Structure formats: structure tokens, C-alpha cells
Amino acid sequence: LGIPAEPLFRSVRSLPKHRYAISGEYLCNDWTFRSEYVHSTGKAFSTTINNFNDDNSKNCNLSKNGEKADGYYALVIAPVIQKKLHAKARYDVYRPKAEWATAKTYYEVGFDYEFHPNFQINLEYARVNDKSVSALAKHSYNMVDVEVDFKF
Image (tube, rainbow, N blue to C red; front, side, top):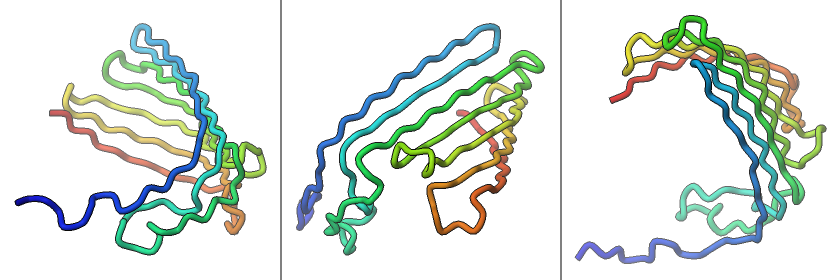
């Protein structure tokens, strides 16, 4: 009665990892300053399990990214019109091998406008320098993100 015929987890893939993060945030008069550094050591699997019924769920090959990874970001949100319109700037980098030759870096600027406490629109532009995928023809590209937020 309601009990699955097969166990929920067929097998466990596990590797030892050591991670830490250091972060901080300062909020004052509608200004936000936030930063975080993360660091990881230990091996990783080459594939992520998204479905326990496919062949990737049995793949225990190790990633060739190495045993270290790290990332950092810094964010500033400044009021243009207090509690309504904000300008944002963010620097974000992730290094899957903890080496600059594999870094994926985002330089972002944007705005958010709060029409109502339950409705907000965000617009962001990002310049991306992606060295993490060596097969890319161009390592630098642009992205624009428009987001509509509803709170309820």
C-alpha cells in the first residue's frame, strides 16, 4: 500500500570532500554590500545523476577537473530611488580547477524596479569570460537577463 516496488536509492556514489565558505553582508540605508569566497578540495564524479534509471547513474568515473575548485563574488546594490529603483554591480568568478586558466568570470551590471512590494522587474547585462570550456570558439560573450518577480 503506497510502498514502491524498488528502493528509492539503488546505490550510493560517494567521495570525500572538504568545503568551506566565508561570506559577509552589510545593509545600510537601502545599500547592500555582499561578498563570498568558497573553496572545495576532493575528487568529483565526471557526471551528475539526474535520473537513477539511466546509464549515468552507474558511471563512477572521476572528473578530470582536479581536486580543487573555488569561487568568489562581490556585489553592490545602490539605491537610485530609495525602496523603488536600485542599480547593481557584481563580479563573479568560478574556477573548477582552482586555476585562472579554467576560470569562468562574470562582470554584471543592472537595475531592479519595485512597482509594488509583491511585483518587481530586474534587468541585468553580463559580460562573460569563459575559459572553463576549451572547445568554445569565443571565450567572451554577452548575456542579457530580464526577470519578473511576483511575491505572494
